[in-house]
Every structure is written in structure tokens, then in C-alpha cells.
Amino acid sequence: MDGTRYQLKLFIGDAPSGTDSGVGAASSHSFSVQWPTPDPAELANRELIRPFGPSPASRGIVPYTAAWYDELEQKRYQQHGAWLNTALEFGRHPGESLLLLGPGIGSDALRYTRTGTQVTIGLTHADYPEVVRQNLERHALPVQIENIIGHELPFMDGTFDIVMWNALFDDQPPEPARIRELFRVLKAGGKVIGLFPARYDAGYWQDLFLPLQWLYWHRPADPATGPKTSVSQLRRTFAGFESFKAAKRHLRRSELPHPWRILPLVVLQRFLGRVLVFKAFKPLSARTGFSLPLAA
Image 1 (cartoon, rainbow, N blue to C red):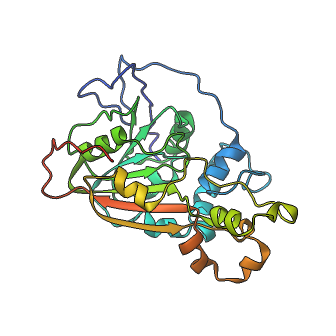
Image 2 (tube, one colour):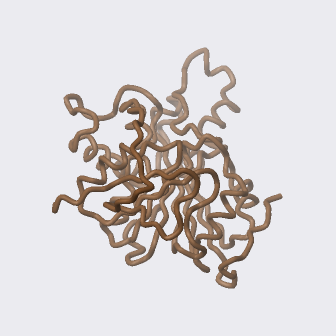
């Protein structure tokens, strides 16, 4: 490591045009802010997409240390999260530009960058900039950081080949204004990869078929806190995109009633998965300034 530092710059309003707000850039527009330190157990559970509970990190590991970040990154892509490697297409986009929304602690950004993808992280009020910065500064990797205020994205039209949007913990459902911005900043033929809480997941079917389950079993809380959605809703919301693909992933046996646990988990997650992986493309025929129509 060569000592490169990652400096997070915050702007009042939109980022100044032409300003490089990436790693290590200095600007008179930047200012320091005291960010609240999040509960490490909550942040760890978010990273591993598991119901809130005791910290999943090993005992004795101090939160926000290098060992803590490394362990969470390793666990994120193992066992229940092994599907993320394929779903997020790590290693399939070397040399391409990617905008990452909902970065968590930055694990996905690191994995994309290590496989040659040019990553820009978009931070919103719902993220923890200092946590992301602290994790990224340990690695000499060229990750750009931009701050996003409201729905407008501070990027020129047709900037990115891919937008990866982790909406599992967003406090609002996907809104047409944000989708139009994703459409605008994507190149023609560009892809959006989204992770959304699935409406018809294990919890939905348990409540439907086991209405008295509270008498004999308390199912764990949902692992994602964002508004749940369905494939049909996303297809309407992403009107203007094409070649839709969707799949359910992510399920733990502990989230299922005991009789259901005898079935293969790899099969169950495709029908009862908690995460909806949604992919769509911006048409090749779309002009750079094309305006995405409002969803019905």
C-alpha cells in the first residue's frame, strides 16, 4: 500500500460541474462533517443480509478495524451469499465504468475494482460515508466517491456502462425520478443491476399458509428493511428499459418453519428467496438525452 488516502467531499446542492470528487482530490468546496457512528451489529447484519441480532463477526474482533472489515467481506460472499458473485457479475466487466448505489461498507466496490471495473460510489443520506471511506482507504484502489442529494445524479449523460443499485435498505420504493436518472447516466446498451426486497418471499408464504404460526414459532424479522416489490412492479417502474431478467435469491434455513427445512435450500430460494435480483438494459437505439417515460 502506497499510503494513498481517500478524501470524501460533501457539497451543498449539486456537485460543482467538472469537479473531481474522487479519491484524494482537494477542493475549497469540501468541508468536514461529524457523522454518527452506526451500530456495528446492525451494519454487519446489513452487509450479510441477515435478520438483526448479535453481531455476526467473530468474538474478539473490534468493530471498524481491518480484521472486522475483512471478515465481513469474506462472509458476505460465502454460504448464503455465494449467489452474489454471479448476480453482481464480478469479473465480467473489466475496463467498464460502474456506478454503485447503496455501497454498504464498500465490499462490492472493492470486489468490482479488483477485477478491473472502474467504480464510482454514489453516497446518499442513508449511507455511512466515514465507514465506506475508512474501509476503502486501506486499499490502493482507484475508487471514485460522489455525493448524491435528492434524485438528481451529478454525472453527465451516458457516463456509465453499468449501474449497480443495492436498494435492500432504502427507505423509499424505486421512484420514477430516480429511474429516469439511472436511464440518463447509462450509455446506450448499458445495464442496471438491482437488488430489491422480494414481496413474495418466505415470509409472505408463511403468513399466508401458516396463519397461526405465532402459537408455535416466531419467525425471524426480515433481513432487508426496504419496501418490498415484485417483478411486475419493477417492470412498470423501469419502463423504457428492455430485456428484463429477474430471479429470487438468498434464504437461510433459520428463516423457515422446521418442516420446510428438509427441502433443498438451493431450490427453495428460487421460489421463496428474500432478495429480488433485477436486471434490465437501456436500448441501443436510445439517444443520450432520451427521456424515460413515467411508469404507469
